[in-house]
Length: 75
Image 1 (cartoon, rainbow, N blue to C red):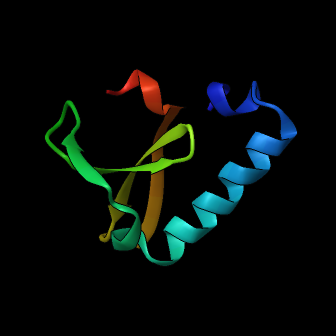
Image 2: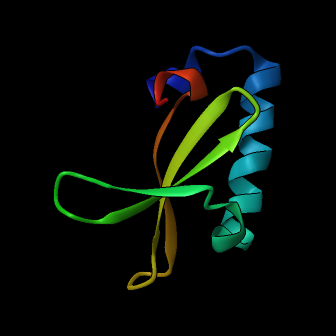
């Protein structure tokens, strides 16, 4: 999460709020899906200028944030 650590506090706070919202209802925040290198289906949420890639790991009941990047970088 080096990307997040380098952001301004305002942006870090915004992302923290997004992470909490996604954790409560992951399916509501899946704007589209992609697949990682091992074949897992990952969801991507566009939040303002950020793209948050996450995996709802049902087996261990955790939401895993896989990547945060600029939304413009994924298009």
